[in-house]
Image 1 (cartoon, rainbow, N blue to C red):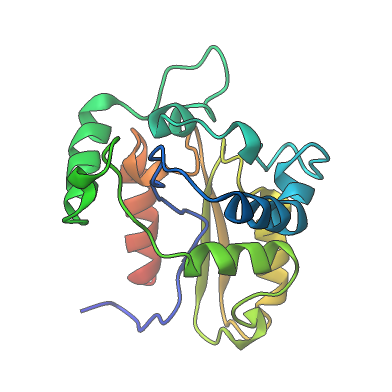
Image 2: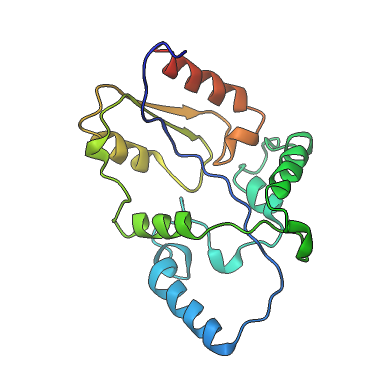
Length: 198
């Protein structure tokens, strides 16, 4: 049992592998998708990127997800996402979708709800009110995370006005996918200590 009851632990860590099959779409679907991208995504992830420090260009999104996962490590540093960790996770993740092997390349279908929530959040409309968090709050992000930054974490800490305890921890030499990386034990340790009230 936990040393204290904790209802919310926020980690700015998200992991997903998008389906990247070579599907054909009707011209009206392509036009509709382009309009949605231009309206919702392009301001942060297109040619006029507002914050290139914390946003990647979705127009150049790599088909090889592993490349995207390792691109956050600064040049000259050793990789932190190693094959011995990534491959078992990738196999297990693919197994979560019984139809993953039916697509070429193999891919996992993921629901669009989390992406819609993320797009809304980028537009300033969160799926929740941070002031409504009434339990202790821990925000964890990797030092090399390009999808969130110190300002994002600071904003959330300041907005969580009802939380009795708010902490922010940045894991050194970790990216947005730190839960798969060499320093994931630091993430586990910090989260467990927080949950145990240490």
